[in-house]
Length: 431
Image 1 (tube, rainbow, N blue to C red):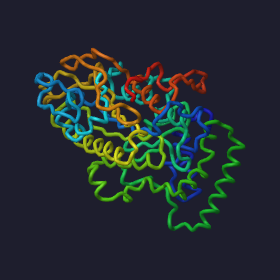
Image 2 (image 1 turned 45 degrees about the horizontal axis):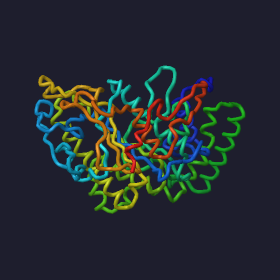
Image 3 (image 1 turned 30 degrees about the vertical axis):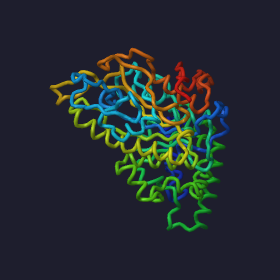
Image 4 (image 1 turned 60 degrees about the vertical axis):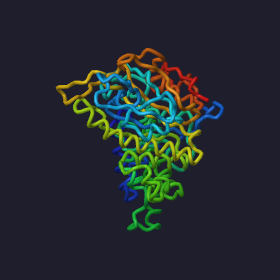
């Protein structure tokens, strides 16, 4: 087997099998994020945010039925009604009543526009700042943050993905140590991170020594940068297994009233887990919420999806604010594109893909809340003020963290890349 040409998933499978054989447990969640080396530079902006919670609405969230409402325009609004918010002059959809009460913390980015109208390509651009290429995999945004800002807490992973596809948070050309650690169900915590009770401490220590010996022999034969990414696997996993911070992943530690305040949905509980991880120094947490692809029956599906978003987002903002954590935590609500202003009656009043105009949201992290940035025309069909690309949004996230958007990282193939490609941060949003 040629290890130099093996792809990332083949290497990951190899290391998972080695870990199972050596330990008697699976360390798959650890494989995506070894302890990072020193950051290229530390956050430099005054009052920079320390962490990011990135809430990804997968499938293309309808901007008109959530953030970018058009009062009085029944032709495009359909069955969706409009409500007031905590900020005079700003209105939201009736689908987001709890979030409306947190409007003072939020900026509605209603001038979003993208060139990508397909799900896979749209998500790739939003989450990686680059268009998809067959010749390279670009790092996820969380990987960039890890590379440029480093870990806040070296005992636990710095980039965690909750309820998302593990394959979509890989480190790309930066390698496995900058990838996100995947968590499926937030209520299940970090799986396979404890020593099985059937294995004694003495036997476990013997297995560790055997694994270390095998590792050293293996690396003398195979000298590959990709394989070396996993050299710290056993040490890192052992550190996490015996670390007090492991409790950050355990939602049973939360009072019942706090869990209830977030709501029962998987997404809402993911938001609660994200707050716990920020408390323990995790740098970047992505929480995914799917099902927004409303080609059919838009006015039934969007309220259901919005309920989960509304519960989780509103509770998260209130909780972070109450604990004094909102100013140092940037909360982002993103999606790959919007939905058409036209309502397709033959599809049970559905809305199709619409990359030309959509909305995202920023809150906390030094952002001056209670405002909108960007504007669409009266039908929500075209951006007429402050058009913002996914690259611009990601540059703004980097700016919130105090990271330079001009810092160049050279890929193994010798090509230069930056965190947001050619995107420019919207600095006027900051207090």
